[in-house]
Image 1 (cartoon, rainbow, N blue to C red):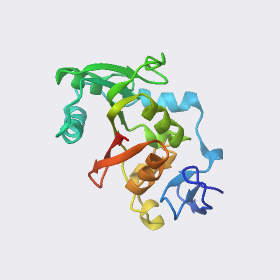
Image 2: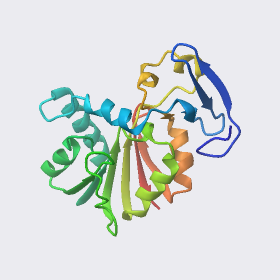
Image 3: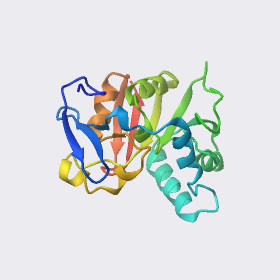
Image 4: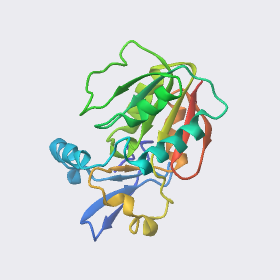
Length: 211
């Protein structure tokens, strides 16, 4: 199987516990699920419907506040798009509270492509990329909607690039998680999307800037 990120030949490995097959790319460090184990769109949405993502969830709000503190440190932006806002646009509301003009999109809950023919200073996409079958295509789409020197900030847990560790990792258990990254994986995509690395926290947040 060729890598969905860099088209390099991958190595397959079995997850005996979950009864699934994954592929691991030694070149860009991506790990991705065999397509035959994807859940349906209906099952995917039902999974999201059970998430407790609201402004009343203090832990959820703190996660996003920490994300924004990291993202917005030493950069100035006025407009933002939250791509993949979920059923409740918590991050969009927190961005508004910081004085930004914000719009948001979600394929299930806000499916109108409000970003068409628009560009933004900042695009956020939190806990989205692990759900994507073609993350490079989406990253390129987001890049095309950035103003010059605009910024994309992503949140997704990075794996350790070790198959044994991966098979013990709780993050793989979510049936809607199909693609897994290290910073190197995202930087491999970024090079083809006219983006450069600004910073990452080596855990779950990575910020890119339009070249």
